[in-house]
Image (cartoon, rainbow, N blue to C red; front, side, top):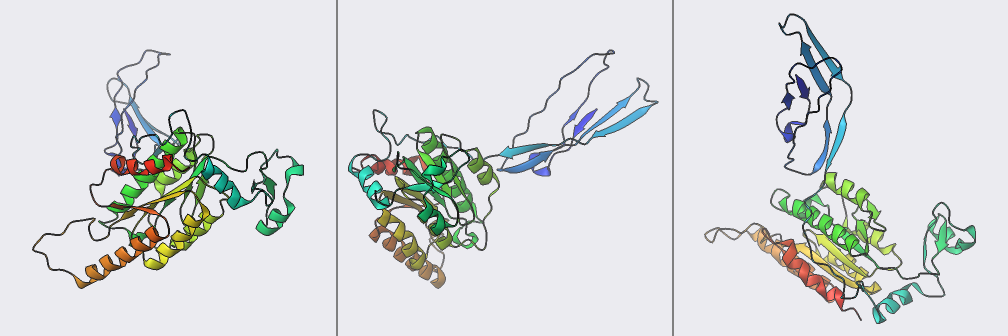
Length: 326
């Protein structure tokens, strides 16, 4: 009998019984796991119990080998943001404008990578950043986008069900943009991942285990996003915001490119019964939320409200405005 040890969240331990094997014979068995939630799980070790036909002699062995199972968020099929003919999210005037933000005299730079020609090192930028930076003269503008994910525990609702919605949405957006040939840059207050040339494996691994944190200020996420010299657009998945946090995000819109925010409506996420009393705290919450949304919109963001039951595929179509940036 073979018994594999698996986390209780994945169900009961699988047990497989093999009939008698002839000397030198081999047998292949398998079992199926259907995870109910994203995460990183450890499968094993495997315990093997063998006995003679009469059950007089029994041997129990445990093989100290485990396998890591990474369950990514649910990836929803989303429409492409590419224009007919293969154009990306930005073109024409818009691309020129994005380059102008960097400045041809200032030269776009990126972090030094092994193998880069030392003659391309930008010493002024390296001194400013505290690390080696190289010039990107041959391609000052790149077709990329920033994907922001709000991981503040207090900003989400419904026992963090809105957080899970946002994680799934950020994962789906990252995959869709990558498949469109757009390099997404996944950013949270704590981590960021540049997904180049369709490789988003590290970002998916992170999203498989990311948890809402008590300390994850919006300002930290904005600071990371501001390090990018140029992006074609920004799509942010946000929880409840204060007007001050919205103002911080508003600064990102001044750099060019389309900025779209899918924002949790903290009051409407879980509808209240008509007979329920109006909570003064909820009224204040709603007022604060309205001010934050107005602040974002005034700064140039396109704001899409998100409530329980919102389908990402439907609201994603509103990002079609990214197709006409010229």
